Amino acid sequence: MNSNAKQAVGKDFSVASMQHARAMTWKVVDEVAKRIRPGMRESEANVICKAVLQELGMERIWHPILIRFGENTLKTFKERAEVDPQLAENDIFFVDLGVVWDHHEGDAGATYVVGDDAEMKACAAAVKTIFDEVEHHWRSTGAGGKDLYGYAAQRAEALGWRLNVDIKGHRVSDFPHAIYKAGNLGDFDERPDASLWILEIQIAHPTRPFGAFYEDLLA
Image 1 (cartoon, rainbow, N blue to C red):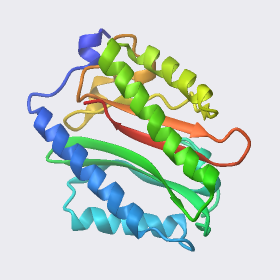
Image 2: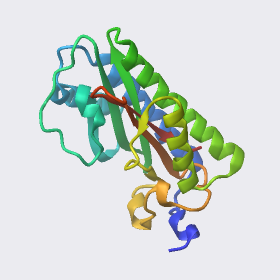
Image 3: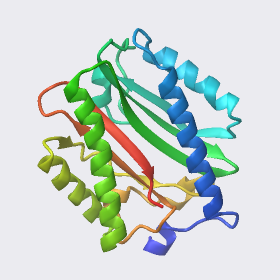
Image 4: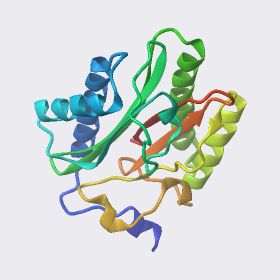
């Protein structure tokens, strides 16, 4: 499949609609994070998330709700949670949502900290820093997807964190993007077009059992 096919869109695709889907998905992520409290379990947070999605009038979800607490922040999207952890007073969590709004796909995720654990706060800040640096690298150099993730690994190591190299980003578009079989951003040699790819960054603490996650549209 050539790069044009991997970056194809449907006849109803709209950049404005992609931006709307992005904004609405972030609105849900932020609102859900505000409602998560110590003592809550992951399953309870999922119930809250479903309620917020209904409140804001989502069209549908296109990938399962993923909310990870504590040690589960080290798990990838495809790894099932073996337990239903309870958020501690000093803890870390992330929210990852894929939602369809007006027939276009939003995908956003961010990490949050409760309490005053300095290393957890540093981890949550670092994953956003690495994301921003990689996004800037994309804008300023025209680097392809493989190069972006090579750069992400370098920046994570330089900042003292471990990049999860199994998390490589993916396509989005007018729903459903899966028909284009575009694969992972981290396996895409050419420069990714704007408003079509999600950059995902997941890092881990070098010694402690937690990590952080951030994703957003390359726009």
